[in-house]
Image (cartoon, rainbow, N blue to C red; front, side, top):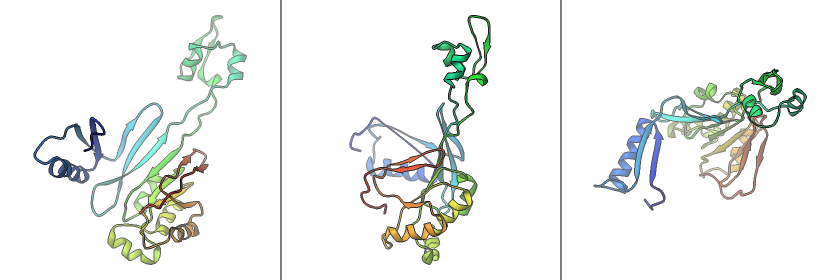
Length: 241
């Protein structure tokens, strides 16, 4: 709308995309075409993006009978080269080492063959981050987020207001924490908190079930590592509403 770019592509379920198109064509630019390359891409459960480094999966989320989705970001496992083995076998620096890292065997000038298994360390798992927006039922998410190094999910209500949470299409901090515990998640970050509660109260309720729980703040920087290490950076300004 403010000329920030030449292209806008929106990914989502059919309900969300219908609302986006109505907003674009009926409210923001009524009666005319948007002054940018605008496209919508419908989502379905499964892999929606993949390259040599990252895989992104979408999974269904229950929220007010809409086709909502959560997302799992997976850094692919990788294998590091063992320099001492390369030197011991006489593999020169250059394209030979690149080919070995890519999984191809190489033939050395003296005729010996060196295979990737001889010079690559065991695979190291990549970090896995699950992100869920609004949901009215945490239990169906168990398998989708199982084993994630970090889970970001809403915690709009406290357990004492669980009935109200269900009526409004949300979950409680305790429900989010029970999901994290059952799924073997390593760290839980809570957001979308109702202004009726102090964030510390949300955090206390979640930690009683799952100790590695925190309320995420605007502008927090969180590093998610495959082994579960999480580092929070500077910038704790405000709370998610």
